[in-house]
Image 1 (cartoon, rainbow, N blue to C red):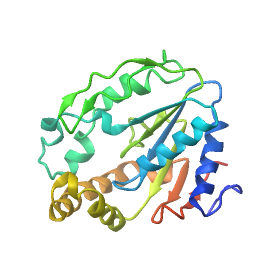
Image 2: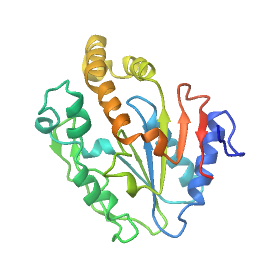
Image 3: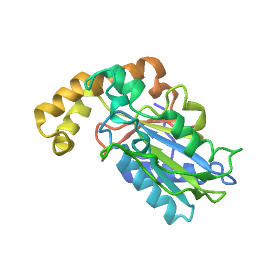
Image 4: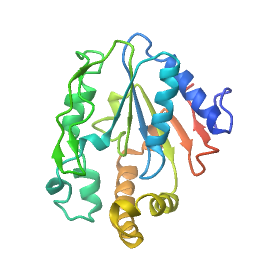
Length: 230
C-alpha cells in the first residue's frame, strides 16, 4: 500500500491531505477534480467537506454533481427501469456535462459554465445561470461513472472511493427508502440495476486502477489510502 506520509488513518487526516493536494495542484488555472465511487459510497458528503475546507483556505470552489446532468426519464429507462445497461449507458447526458461544465473549465475554455442542466426528480430541464469561474477556482464534481472513457481525460485529479457491493446495498437500505418507497424496492433496484451497472463500469473502465487517489471507504470514519500521487 502506497500512502503519502502526511495521511493517517483518520478521516480528518485524509481530508486535510486531500485539501493540501488540491491547493498545490494547478494553482494558476481551474483545477478539475472528480470524486467517484459506487452508489451510496459517500461521494457527495466527502466532496462537500472538501469544498468547505478549500474555501476556508481561500481557494474558490465550484461544486457540481453528475446528478445535475441526468437524461430525461424516457431515455434513462428506455431499456427498462431495472436495466443495468440502461443505468451505465443511458442515465446521464455526458454531452451536456462536457459542453456546459467541463469544456468551459478546461485550460482552453472561456470559464463560462453551468453547474447543472436537468432536474431528474421533476424530470425537467433546469434553467441554471451561466457563471464565470475565476482563474484559480477548483471544480469538484461528485458522481458515479466519472472515470469512464469519455470523461477520464478531463480530470486533473481523480479520487475513487472503494466499497463492496454489499456495503453499497447496506447503505442504500438506510438512505434510499424514502426516495424509492420501501426497503424491498431499494433492494430490487440495487440488485437488478445499480450494482450490475457498477460491475459494467468496473469491467469497462477499471476506475479503481486509474484514479489518482484510491481510498478504501468501507468505514468512512477510518478510510484507508490505497494509492496516492507520487
